[in-house]
Image 1: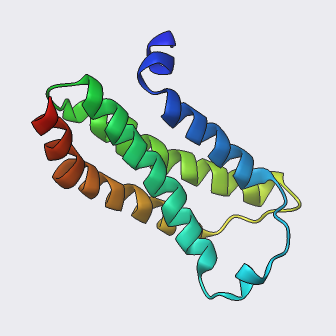
Image 2: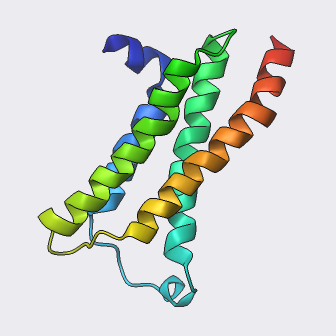
Length: 128
């Protein structure tokens, strides 16, 4: 467990922030009037998490272990988002689960995976 705190400290902080943001009652703002702003926020949260996972993984590995990347960097964030949506629906009074939020979360993970592999990987490995 200590290994993950050393190798992925920023990712773990982002996971904690996402969990907090997923269960607190957000204040009312004018931003809510923008269509689908909520989905854009979900894409950014999970895309940001996955991007940072790629960054932290690539800085400490010279080759890609696809088993680790797929399970830890793709499947785990998607499963986490699904669990959060279910918990919001069935365990809170102030939030509701939404399948479109889950799709937006998964989209963020997939987009960040593409950016991580095709853009971030060559940049980081070229420098080292």
